[in-house]
Length: 195
Picture 1 (cartoon, rainbow, N blue to C red):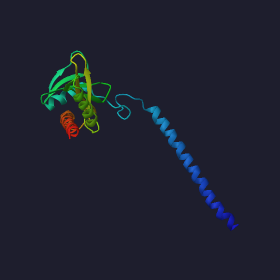
Picture 2 (picture 1 turned 90 degrees about the vertical axis):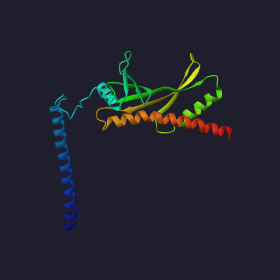
Picture 3 (picture 1 turned 120 degrees about the vertical axis):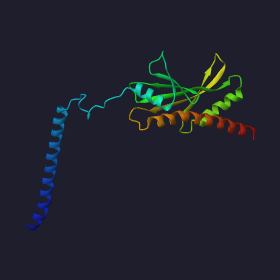
């Protein structure tokens, strides 16, 4: 009889534990189903839907506060042309996305007929892109018979960014850092070639 009780007591505890957890999980599932059906997304219910702020005024005000000269692009919606520290940038935004794209277009140019310089540009662009700054890219302009070097950054942006002016200023200055990095890479590659 004693052996029977030694087995019965742990089995009873296991069965009651399983029953307790099964009952509590069913009760939670029923509560969740009931609360989900009670809540419907609307403007008053901030737990289920995030209120979006229009990107245009946020970007425009931040650019003004940063000291940029701003020109709204008439041809394209969602595009600002700005001047920051003498450099011309294009900022593209969308109301559907929390990201902006910053372009610094054609800040370096080389003639297509100079094969050695084209090779330097390609190598310097590749070296620059191994770092975590703005992306450096180049395009070929057949009409002008040259290759142009640009920077591009895609970065998150919105009213939720603390100190948005400093954040945007840093993103713009990343382009200047890449200019410096690009020229340094060209010098280093030239030194290696002529050493």
